[in-house]
Image 1 (cartoon, rainbow, N blue to C red):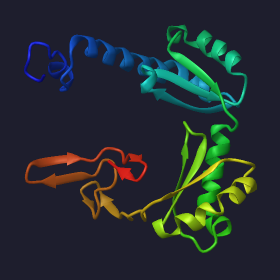
Image 2: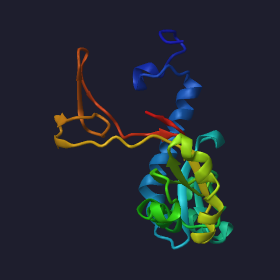
Image 3: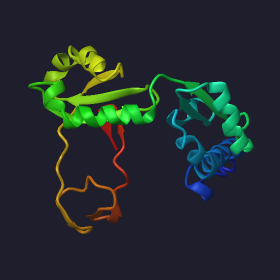
Image 4: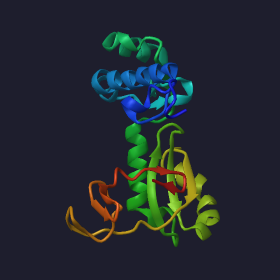
Length: 209
């Protein structure tokens, strides 16, 4: 479609889009802007806050997770930002974001206690799933998975998901221009085509980009 009369997105965003697609894209951007500027502080300041994400499969709706009463939290958040009426979903879950984050840190710092003989590469919180994810060497995945239920019980029932991973490559950077690995946001990358910088290191399963 690029270069055709129907393409109105390339000129504005560098992405081929029809008028309808462009309108929907900008609507979603506006929802995210409002959520970031007005909703986040109110939601994250709650003791029952369990996470927030954008559900693009649901049309770009804002999803707030809570351990409280979902209907009551929805009403209170819409009082803060009524423009999100119809664009905000509140779902009740079992654990707060703080509880999940604390469990993730505990698993990483005390990995030898929870997973004896198994090197833990990373731990992180899957907000949408409400789980703590632990990555280990592929050959140790089954052994670690066999301990997941016991670890969950030790951590108060927080769900633990074991995934194969790779060792985190260390990086030693003296300056923005002197770094032995580019796997860090803001590091200048030089090539024959010019210079650029890597954005934040995103992870989806075992894929990094």
